[in-house]
Image 1 (tube, rainbow, N blue to C red):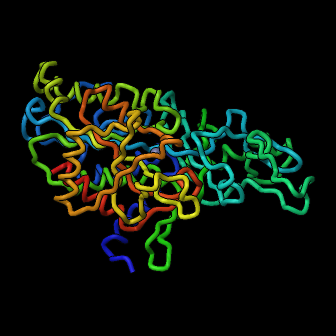
Image 2 (cartoon, rainbow, N blue to C red):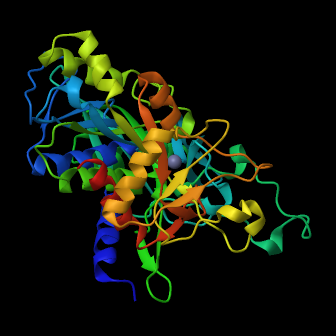
Length: 432
Ligand SMILES: [Zn+2]
């Protein structure tokens, strides 16, 4: 059996993911953990007064988060140690006029967010979660909701009644993707049953809900699996496992170190990061610059701080799928429970830079954590992540890493039980 210390942290990660049916919920869960130990919120609209050793956090759109534990030395001399990850994951989102009735069913017209493995979404128990804008006496407020039960499902077609029995169905995303959420006709829509359900879940008066957004997710909780509980089966390991590891490492690392420790969790990586809160925005740049200018009052000191900084970008890596070994570079198979993965790419789809790589290897040695290295097959290429955007925007030395997983972007991914503790221990050394 896998050692209890590995299981404990992976079970905590499963709880983090369960609390995070949307990117906004994952930020709320991170904030809950940060505030429990004394981090305080600062608004971008306000004037900040941040002193050495302060613990502060910032949000944008409620779906991206930056947490900073300010160091003891000046920013210019000690720089920032940053861990970045993304809060979003592939899924389905309700269209504006999305709720409709068809052939006696109530259904949800949905858009696809990011690149999910579509067939993995069929016949699953799906819940809805999202945000409500609540108007009350001229004030408006954003409230999160999560129904936490299987209210909808995308039904596949029985083989017996397929028109051409020998051929696979041509799955059409417009026609075949809309989940069913109940039974009813056109008339039953007048009551706005879905809006009512969301308001009731959030404990607010439906009449006060001026608008709402709905995302669809798999309600089945994550679990340990395998003969010896060596696996973890869960949705959204890409990339909530990295968000969890980053927050966990920040809270477990020593404070009162010279440099400032930063966790930056960005929304919208799965759709290119080009949003006001994404990794291509100026969110991280402006937070770091304003912190520097607030105490050192010199733009030169800010640039000195960046030159003294190191960024670790953390996102899922492709472990060997034993049924498809041909998909992987044969001399760089990645194994579950083989430890965190450093990612290398000649086309610079990963940010890995030589000095940051050396820093990472030293951290791994100190933490006694095994490291694996990923490089793609030459004829397949690779995805990318937030590492290169952040490294190039800020001019910070960076390294791309991530934990190995199988079935990335499936509604239910698969990782190794031991890797989460390895990742946390590795990131603690980065912050030490
Ligand atoms: Zn990812």
